Image 1 (cartoon, rainbow, N blue to C red):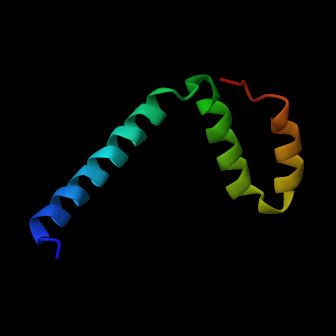
Image 2: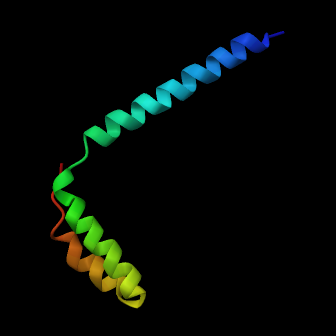
Length: 65
């Protein structure tokens, strides 16, 4: 039978791996899209019925990584 110390150790390793993955993923994002994302979120909250039109318009403005 597996001892609890091993289970805790494996859980800590999985958690540490998830944190490292999230940090690396966040560092690789394209910050040039942040103002566009904020504007789209604000517009979505202000006018939820116009979401599809706003999405189509924003597709051409997003900069790939």
